[in-house]
Length: 268
Length: 362
Ligand SMILES: Nc1ncnc2c1ncn2[C@@H]1O[C@H](COP(=O)(O)OP(=O)(O)O)[C@@H](O)[C@H]1O
Ligand SMILES: [Mg+2]
Image (cartoon, rainbow over all chains, first blue to last red; front, side, top):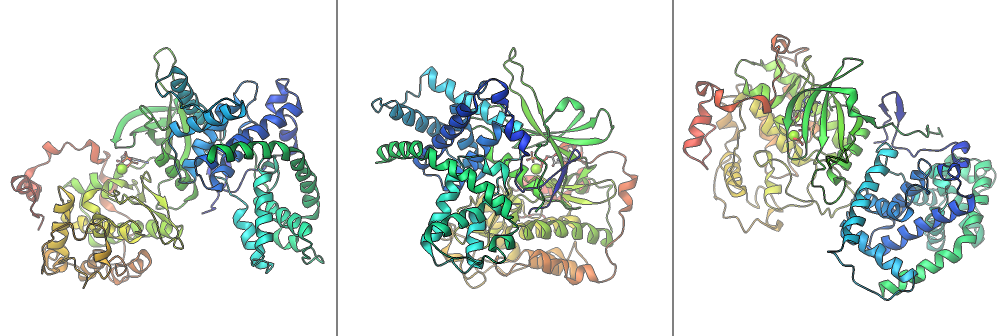
């Protein structure tokens, strides 16, 4: 299926789009005067919202993953200053649910975000008023945002996830019985979604990095001469940069747990 | 590993094309013939209906775009780009999204309904070969078309057939055994028996059934089983292909609706017998017969069909279709006013209207 297709001169394939460093440095939001730190926070917050909403909407992880990648990519074309991050997060999960063949009603998406927001603001639970102007307005905003995401990404919204690569590689490395290793690698992969690694690396490299980190943590030795990951096309340099980025994840762990806690309360 | 360019295809304004005429109207959108204002190249614009889209961008269009972008083959209609029109806030008009396709001069339904268009055996072989090559390609890419019928097969001026309308298409995987697909796909007249009986884990065989129906139409010139309800369609199938029983279709009693329908029993299979009046070639008859096999597990697949003697015996598939180059107007089903078709050429149709619910094509 990964046949490259030509579109008005631009050769495209279903492979993921990789951004050059310049594009990652000079984001539209920073050009609009937003600080780098604030932008990072908004990226993380949006992804957390998506993750939490996805769990409440009983979506499979792949839908949340797609939504987070779309969300991240969109804000390399558009600015957080001009386009509300919460509406965009809603639009991304709404769209990703359809892309991954688990469509959810727009009403449920709006409702779930409403609940998460009330929880985060420590407000008591309340049923959303489906006759209210606020609800109608939100719905139409989400639909408009969905169109903008599609347009901005040129309808290239089908994301290739490293989940499958992880499974394949562990099989080749004959580690596919080690459930602890699989689980750890999987968690790393889900956490990476909050960063821009999906714009920097191919799914294959990300899969290698996740395996690398997990094996190191669990003290599992993998072939090092030559390094096992080179077999899967990842270079040592790429792996090093990746490790740096992943260390950022640890600093946002607090936020992640905060949201996870909220989700647990709502879900129970 | 090659790094891809990071810029996404730009979504141009549809104004770069000049609309010429409307050539189709379906459940999922309108289709226009249009011309690129600069290159003067003709295209077909398919508008994604968003009007009262309460659930945002339609999932069917997302699938259609995903699938069409991944498929690239001579016998699959080519998606050139995606365009949009801006909404105007004053008139409260929402913008639209258009899929831009290479333009094809005809659709197969339009051609078959025109009595002046005549195909000889070797031309039919060529067209069937194109159809099956396209289908083999999509099936090997794990895509089901799910809406094959003559109106969704396009024909270029050079006589190349292209599968179109992927609005109902879906990706399937052989590994996942329990599909929860809707069985309400495929236009009734082309719907395979397993779909009519409520099967939800169907596969490529449903497209092969439709191919069998289309193939017969090259000779009969109209759909061979024109049911007016699901029950009636099953009755027509039974009358042509014989009774649907666990003997011919072992798992049929596990299907939801099998016991619900009170289908005619002990009907003999008469596909070859009844079609032989139209289809003189024995290989052609045999191929149609194999496509119209009741049990999907025994129905011929696209690969075996391409290797069938039909394509490998004299006369061999033609290298061109002569009558098309003489046609200077486009034949689209939508543009044909049924009332003006001469009833003498279509006796089966006039008879049809007198006795609804009975199989009269033969
Ligand atoms: N690329 C094309 N070139 C010429 N005609 C086309 C093209 N695409 C569609 N059409 C015409 O428009 C009709 C409807 O298009 P289709 O893609 O089947 O959409 P729908 O889902 O509305 O049936 C077709 O039956 C055909 O007559
Ligand atoms: Mg159609």
